Image 1 (cartoon, helix red, strand yellow):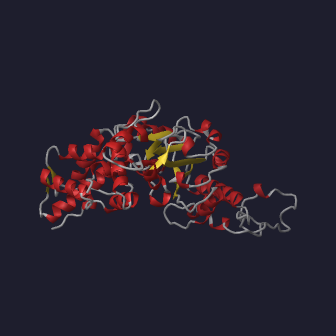
Image 2: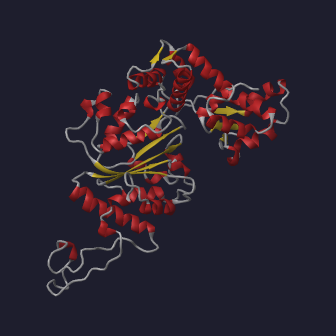
Image 3: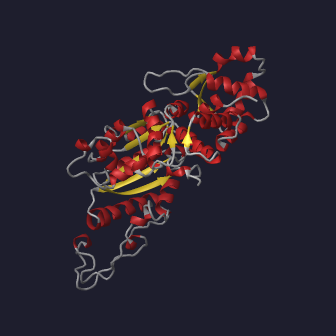
Length: 432
């Protein structure tokens, strides 16, 4: 009987707290950030490091579900009455050009589970002018009259502002806070979570908007690829005072936490799949701290075990997965990115491998950031008779071919791998 590898492993975002492992320090910081009266939560790190999965756990805790924190031994840090929120979760995409595009998406997305629109009261989605009947004095302030009371001829109120998406968004948020957060659901606030925030081309003004909207009843969480907040928010100075308790840099996992992914998978399989001693360590070492890659390798091991009609993941199974990886058969998405980058050039292929295998720089302020310096590979490239290196590099930094590398502006001849998981794949991939 075939075993579904998705029971224990997934390449998707982890939403179920029972699947989530490690990150105890970050969970501790999440508890603090969520229970601060005000403040922006910022989650950043490299691709494949587990940012979106952490963001989904933040959403769970915002809703009042602290099972993950309790499992991590942090029960003593959970307030007696933790702040609870209504939540909005939106994943940005590269078609969003600027802040107004983002707000338009937020105001029109009709997702039943995570959208902003699902929380806006039904009577807040159209323009209706207030009218007063004779029973209410013309001088009465409508804000002090209960809706639906005698003398109010309309129970609807203006919210959508034509041709002004910024004010419409503000009105939607205000309506949610007043009618849903405070009255209907009795929550402490609204949490607006914006994933993949880095892909927005022009983020001008978004920091200021977030700052102006942030109150004890409205909190934002932004997440994306970056080394710090300035990589996520263009006008980051606007929000720096809001993030004293909400800075959450997601770094590569230490080896024991990567191993724990395998151990948790074994538990989820309920004994139907067994991992021989030492296999978890080998897979964790291959993953190099990137849980996405650990999940991919584990999933492929289960597929290989299925093909051999066994339920035990041993060295033979893992070795076969590694051989398929080295030959480009195991992970089609990574292989496709690799082939698109090298094109038909053997020289570019060899140069890419040289750069992937170059020892990474250490930074004083961040963990290993994966920078490579072209001149450090020039001598070896010349010895391997790789010609015209400077003509081989442009394809590796062009967007339509990946990009695989991005230039580091402040240092000439220095590049950074856009996707560290792909870098690790290249290091393991055999040159043919």
